[in-house]
Image (tube, rainbow, N blue to C red; front, side, top):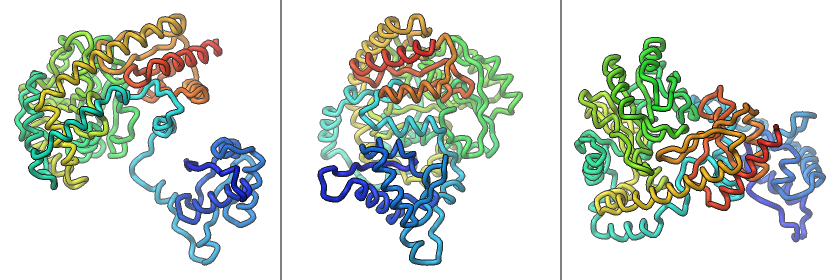
Length: 482
């Protein structure tokens, strides 16, 4: 979708419609809006420019007269020319054709909408998977960067697996989680998403099937499908993924890998019990099914520490373990880690070097300082306390406005409450109506295409006053459908 990032100056001498013509023409001439791009509807253009619809109509008519756009009833306006194509018989590049021919699948329209509106401060992000800016320790990050003076021994490309001092620090940190991993078995990645990309490119055959909880965060991504992988959902209950279903789905789909989020699952918030973890490990060992354990929320327990990660009991190199600082410290640092058998780590390190030649060295030094100075553990204690207060506040507001509309479980940690509406609704319609109220939702169908009764709510991001206003608005919208 074409983005409007400008408004006309209504105090200028040049008529507003002429300013709009100049703006659109500039976008076309510079190639930012290529031929065959569809302009937003007239009403949407008027809202974006802050003008009357008649002004937009006048501007579009002039562009049409110049041969730059064409309009058809019911289909809106499409860019059909640019200044180069008006001057020469050689047609311009068909950039939209190139875009549509790309092998990486686009996000779903709802995910694209979420990504588009999240940076806009006019919307309250009610389901976002990110710490509030108020919880990210900016002042302490500045102190950390100052403390690095004289400690950064190099700022060039790091070795393929990542900066050795950081991998040593991660190795020491993982021992506090019950995981023994040498620096040689650790790969530093630019966030958890890159680890998933590396695995899809580096160790899985095209056409392989990945088993995962249903619902799951991965269903919101096109990453694995774009690499030719298939996803097969496995049933969950209150203790986590069902081991018997894992065995059945492995046989049915010839599963190559199990992806699981045992700690404070995204999106349901479920904490897999210790007994369930033992059962799952036993089944996967028997089925010789490798596990990718995503533990990015594991340190965000709010009541008491949860069971040890699956990797802590792994005696056979069955588990690839994924950790990150994005959910606990700062998503902008772009530092995560993957732990596994050395041949796998070396293979993925080679793929990573082909993709980006290593994570930011400056970020790696900053992460090293956080992990080795004791700051990170102190920060985690503060974050847990803050999230615990936020969780209680969201539960209070849900009890006030949703007791007759929905059911939910209070999670023991992480970011999310998986709100189950008692009556199915058109989630896309609710999403659109909430947007009009300035509320950005994460509907359940993003994580399970068949879901029409859930919302992923996050207590980690929105400020208290925004949270109260947004939840009240959603409850009001739901009641208006009753």
